[in-house]
Image (cartoon, rainbow, N blue to C red; front, top):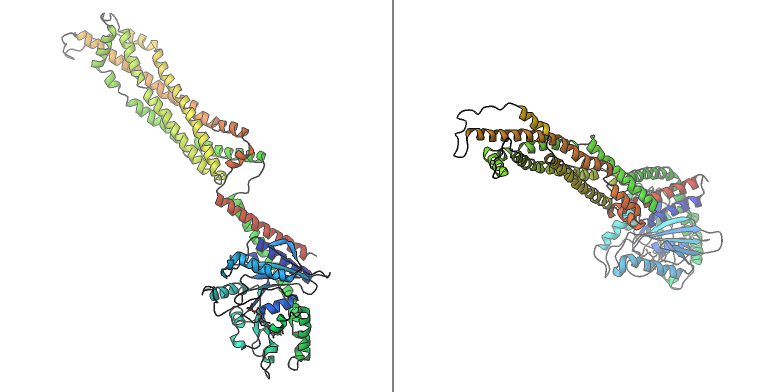
Length: 613
Ligand SMILES: Nc1nc2c(ncn2[C@@H]2O[C@H](COP(=O)(O)OP(=O)(O)OP(=O)(O)O)[C@@H](O)[C@H]2O)c(=O)[nH]1
């Protein structure tokens, strides 16, 4: 199994990666929360900073009145074999601090960078790594001191804010609580113990630390507490003697202070029997061992959680679409693939499989025949109009046998009416196709992420449909004009062969310039033309759909995006990328997921590397 150093180092690495990616707890089930850590909790002036400095063997924490610790400080201690002693911040990875006064200033400045000078607090941690021969491998999180009153310049809510922040750390089941209480205070009133009892009633993850043993009133001692009788925890209490304010003022060296602390316990009449289990050095070792144990226990569940999260993130990436390739060739390929996907959907609409294509048949089967039926031939071929047209065509010399000119004019005049329904069919099919383009874009799953490309496809497809409509119009008008340019001779020859019927008596009383015979002949002309037009109508009813399908539907299937393809082939890379623009929110989401995925995968790799050592 892995060594203590590698296990704690492993968690350190993952914690740093979490912070870089903005994962520092408080966001539901985060990786950070799954990692065991030690949080230092205590009331103001309880000696928290002194304990941390003593564990590190260095003076490096900001001092001052009021609430100095305003952001969590994740303190990662790495034991070095060489004599080198230095510190590094995650936010300034290139800089190696060997002067610990500069570390103190940097913590202070970095705190202000997020919280401003307003003395507010923030839950975004500062990561500090200390490499030293005088430390054990350990990670501690220093949290703001629990306080009762806000000082000047701080909002009243700060007392509550601090408690909430501290609580958010210590309530996590993976958090080991280092609860610091000064010995010269009644244990029953200790803020740290109060909070620890609340979140860890059985005391299995709380380590009780008693500071300021040297400051207790003469004649009293803390053996009741240190021996676990005053307040029972699963782990033994540790007593500490830190540097006094006077020592600090005199700049007493931390290593010397550790030595003095050891001597204090060894020579103490009250605590001599406990000496081997007292002091900051012992505390550091105890915590390091415990942290290692907990990490080892937790690794299987951490790996399970990581694997589950990786699966979930992958599934979400699949759902919102993978990232787009950066090079132009791949982008062009992607655009063409997307266009083809659209084209497939569009064709399914036309050929069946998806609804909509049937509406084109509806135009031919319904709309066109109905429009043809409504044409005003009754009026155009009324007795009066026939008479007028024939007479005008005859001119000064009435026709002798059959009014050839009159017939032609009546037929030409009638055929012109067909242009209306012919064009209307072209338009109706055009609108059906346009609607199908719109629907197909909306229904093409792959296109959903690319609003710009959707627009481009719509523009080019509609332009193409417009061209097809123009072509369709010209063709159907030509069909109609063809009907009047050459009449079906047979039809009239057959008429001629039919015997003339005698006019019925009293059908129409003869007018001043008309005789019975003439009336009858005009009526016959009217009905002949009407029969001829009915024949033309039947023909057009069949040929207009052919022209429309040929010019519009067939072309839409064949070359709806032909122009688009020709265009994009010539476009430079910038314009291709622009076409693949996505919804910015979606892009942001994908970046987030990709980052988290990277974090979880690297965490898994790290764990694998350590676990198989
Ligand atoms: N004599 C003696 N003084 C101590 C001991 N521990 C801390 N002090 C003094 O108590 C004062 C407060 O100690 P800190 O370590 O700054 O306490 P803190 O909990 O970090 O305080 P804040 O950060 O202000 O909340 C300092 O003057 C220390 O010198 C101790 O064990 N013995």
